[in-house]
Amino acid sequence: MKHSNKRKPWILTGAVALAVVTILAATFAWFSASDTATNKLATKDGVANVSIQETFVSPDDWKPGQTVTKQVAIANSGSAPALARISFNELLGVHTLMSPAPTTPWDPSSTTTAPQLFDTTPYTSAPWIAYTPDNAAIGNVVVSGIPSGVTVYVNYVPAGTNGSALDSWSIAAWAPITTGNLAGSAQTVTYQQSWDQDSKTMTLSNVTFNTYAVTSSGPIDWTAATPAATAIGFSQAEAALNAAGAPTGGNYDKNLVLNYNNAAVDNTTPTAGKWYYNAADGYFYYCGLVQPGTVTANLLSSLLLDKNADSSYYSSMTYELTVNSQALQASKAALDAQWTTVQSNAALYNLLSGVCE
Image (tube, rainbow, N blue to C red; front, side, top):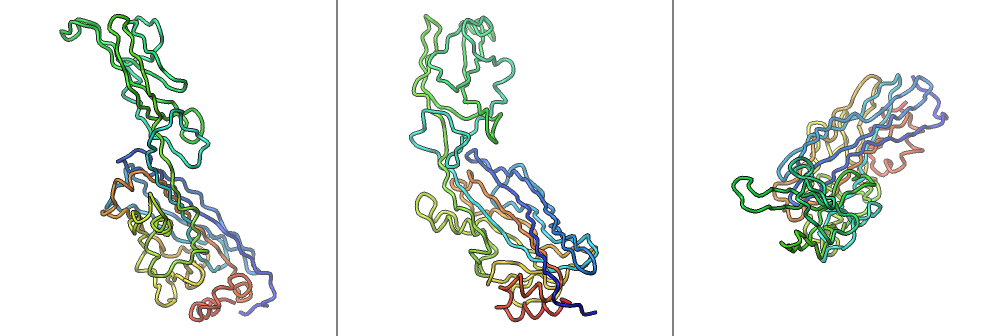
């Protein structure tokens, strides 16, 4: 049944974000956070309740050559059909260990630096003891030259232990992080040390704090960058970083791979029931209506860090991929008023307008 095209068109947006954060050199770690926003569209015939449906399997240690499941589809739990499209936003930053290292701890409010993290786990239980002066439990050893913001733990081995004729001490030092999103972690510190046997004094000197300088691609909005169809299989943030100057330029080339569901994507011709990428506006369009109680086929299947990714560059990076959804009521008037960029692609426009009321 045909309805009047004078109804007010509705358009709402949603997003699912995943964040990738790797800080320790030579370690690939993936931390994720996601939030699905629902698109509710009121129409004459009912309500379309459209949201992103995501399956994401987060590995503890993402290494070159490893594929990570990241499935993205659109679900409609409402009572009215809707049009749907998806776009991406990205952000990629890489960390380069600062040289010379700073002499003050990392500032948790900084957006241009990040700490090199220190694993305190082996040092915070027996036989290690937090350093305090005049402590018989650590053999009354003295540790001097400890700067503000640094914690020291001591491992004291008395003479006679394991046949040793002398007392011995080992120390471990780091800078606790008490605020910000890394609160509870610790920053690596480096230092020189000298030992005075007579006074049982360990003196620290030239203490520095291992900190990374962050170089960022800046926010990459696919609807603004509108990557060519030949480039949509790769991170556009990585491409932006690769095109930049030193120290990142030329070192980040097509190693962050976006794998699509080939059975449900046709980027050559808009095909009913499949996803189609429109290079005119940077959106993936579902070629049809998302009917009530249905879920589209997955657009995205997985993410891959290519086996050729050089760990000297990719071992310390921050990558964010945000999947944005838009839903539109199924009317030609809404399509013409809201998704105006579709009109420049005759095949896509004819298909979408043909399924509308």
